[in-house]
Length: 111
Image (cartoon, one colour):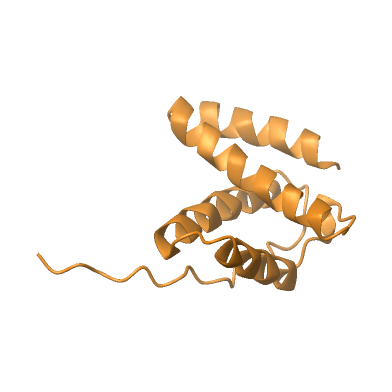
């Protein structure tokens, strides 16, 4: 399965199964597209089923180097986790590479 097929199915899943808003769906799709851009920037030719936890960790380091703040990184990871969860539920992958990846610490502001 290629990335575009996965994105089309993911978009339908978010809209029909999870009833998310158009803005949330757009953000989740953008997160997956960022991962695709990362693979292109690093000249890695990965199919969806070939993505590993190490690939996602390297992607998060890359996102951090781009200057994204931890809350934004956590939101991006949330979108990727939703994508891989969808692929797992749809039997398009056998193992969820995002399952053991922890979100960056965002810190809390005192009231």
